[in-house]
Image (cartoon, rainbow, N blue to C red; front, side, top):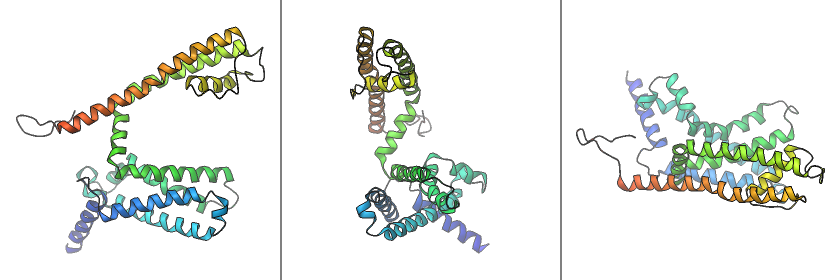
Length: 273
C-alpha cells in the first residue's frame, strides 16, 4: 500500500515537471530546449562535409545520447500521463495521450533513429535515410512549439481558421488546374519542350500564381500571354487571402487574451466557446 502511494506521488511529481500548467519554464524545460537547439545545429552542420569529416564519431555519439534522453523523456511522459483525470485509464488513457499532436511530434523526433538502427544493412536506400534525417530535423524543430507560447498561438489560429484556409486552398487548386490546362493548349504547339503536358505546365502556373517568375518558361503566343496576365493578376489577389485570414485570426486571439477568460455571471466559471 505504501509503495503504491509512493509510486503515485512520484508520478504526480514527474508529470508536474514535464507538463507544467502555469506556462513557466523549469530547469528541465531549459535543458530540453537547449538540447533540441543543439541537435538542430548539429544536424545542419553535419551536412557540411569539411566539418563532419573532422570527427564523425562525435556527431554520432551526440546524436545517440540525445535520442536516448528524448526516448526516456517520451516514455516518462507516457507513463506519468495517467496523473491527469482525462488520461486516468492505464491503457486507453495512455493511448489517447500518445496520439495527441505534441506527443506524435515527440515520437517523430526519435523514431527515424531506431528505424535506421534496426533495419538490416542495405535494406534502406540512401535517399530514404536522408528523408528520415529530414523528418528528424523537422520534428525536433516542431518540438520547440511545446515551449513557445507564440508557436502555440500560431497552431491555435491555424486550427480556428482551418475551414477558411481549406476553402482557399481548394479554390487555389482548382485555379491551378484550370490555368495549367489552358496554358498547355495555348502553348504546346509553339513550345513543345516547355509545355509538353499539363503536369509540366503546372510548374509554370505555380511560379506565375505565386508571382515568383523564374523565367524558365515564358508564353510566346498571343493567347498564352493574355492568359498569363490574367493568371498573374488573380495570383496576386488569391495568395493574399491566406495572409488576411491568418492576420484576422491572430487579431482575434490577441483580443481574447487581452480581455481574459469569460466568466459565467451565475457560477463564475470560465466559459469555453
